[in-house]
Image (tube, rainbow, N blue to C red; front, side, top):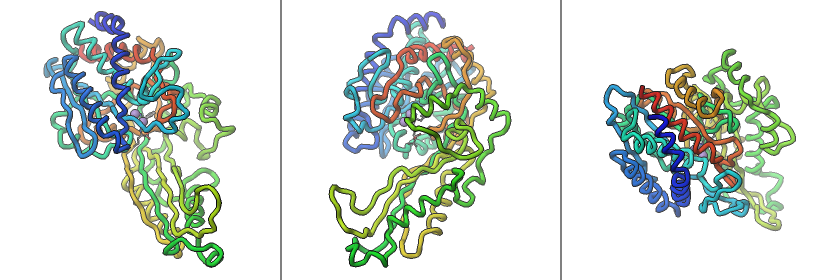
Length: 456
Ligand code: BES
Ligand code: MN
Ligand code: MN
């Protein structure tokens, strides 16, 4: 049965790729209002596709934002486990477009990589599941387990409508385990299971000084410039050891115990490669932690953007009324993103000089997650990955965020297997995003093996 499905998948490589290219050519950029119709088109394309490969109840569920696609196949019977598959069909914007070597929405293969926006994050990885299900269905007439699919269209903008949908439909989404392919492996021959993701809180600060922009000659010298105040405040949020100075910020951070330090230290993560990939001459981070710990198991605070005053060509002698910054924190289990946003706001209000007033806009937030490394599903997944890639998977934490993992834990009470098939140099969110094609086909095979084993 497994062999038939694998043989089917091998025989359909060209068609699978052609179908993926079709999905990739729909510019479903969730954050841009002008792409709203494209999101709807991508959702409909997926629902049609799920129906065509033999899944039941394939549906486009409207939300106040981008629609959520669901489908299922529950005919394996009540004695078989149910696997919930999540993915996202939305993609990041493409700018700066001039740095792309090919059209981001005209996917093309070069040197074994498929290039285009969403190839790795996440249309290509999500499509692995559709093709594994199709291969099992077409070659054996059924699936070895019950499956439910939930594919959202707002992941890249903080998923404002997904949690509500999951809470509302929790009975229908009940499952034994969730699977997500939206992360990466360490090398093409080194699979990896991610057991931790960071959470996030994102906010915008607006500082107001004088009631309007002023002449810097007439007023300069006696006015607290809000851009200066903002810079001073932001600079004080970290000390020279890279620690965040907000009182209470670390209170709930789950410490990295010795066993886990060993797991992370065993990862063949290369600091040298990381430095090269990032294009920096040397690294800078929180003292007392390895680079891998810093980027996966420790919380961060980053200034994502800062603006105000006069920034156009030429010069203008202005003393600005306003200063703005966008800042976000990556959080780790068990930090709560609402609580951290509260702390951050309170601290910034406290350190703001009396000459300015502060306003906040909370942009989005999501909880981090840690997953049990020793569940039976983990072992089954590890076996499937080893069979296909030739090496047992490395267990690692990832620094990125997939907030639905925490929602699955709290609302549905299930853990998620994060089986990533991307590579760290896939250029996610960057120009020339790509997907290593052998991973697409190996991923399909790994999922065929995993689902078959779970069904035994
Ligand atoms: N797939 C990524 C997250 C990711 C990347 C996990 C690499 C593990 C390894 C996801 O699409 C993403 O970009 N998430 C955003 C979430 C945010 C907008 C709430 C992120 O991490 O910035
Ligand atoms: Mn993603
Ligand atoms: Mn992403």
